[in-house]
Length: 288
Image (cartoon, rainbow, N blue to C red; front, side, top):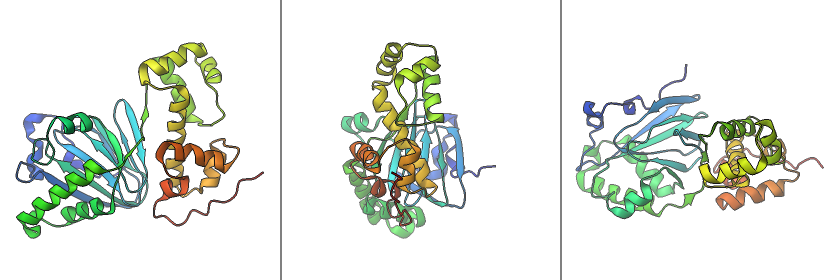
């Protein structure tokens, strides 16, 4: 059975006043929890009335909402707004950080904040942000000191606001035909798979499913396919699969073609993005 990372946050009834156990209030608006996980760990679907940021400095984190699945590599975070149902997993042995933010406080407020952070999003975690979170997670507010804690909250807010956004997240449709098509691709993700071939498997025309992609997911099949391939690449990287092998498994004829896809989506080549500080990727050359 999978272990719970953060059973403290599994709450459904607002009348239970779930944030009292975290001590979240206007004076203490940010709390962080660090968990060392020795194997894959999962948290069931839940929601809570505070915002949450989850990341790992060395492991791959997966967060799912009813609409989108996020798979993020080390040193990248998923932001989950208050009230959004989600489940989460850490896919490998690593330390995971959960940062909880009181939804009405002096650090996170205003129309701009609500507009930009009212939806889930992914961003890069800076070294400063990681160290600030680590300190809040490992030391009590009393030990840190009121003034230092306040300054740290200000810095965390600033780092989150200025963090580089990364286009991660695989949206999933509600239409049954399109959902079936997406599931078929996820089961066997290949760069060479065409929309026409998948449409035939679900008994719909290519033009119909192309229209459904635009209507339901606000993107083309090609855009969605690249996000699905990137998610699979992140998953494989968590198992220490070298990028050259990942490219082959995903149907790319050359490593450079795979590298171009990753770089165009996240602004970094595969090895730099997928592994971060992991040094065990040998990136072997592909077979000709």
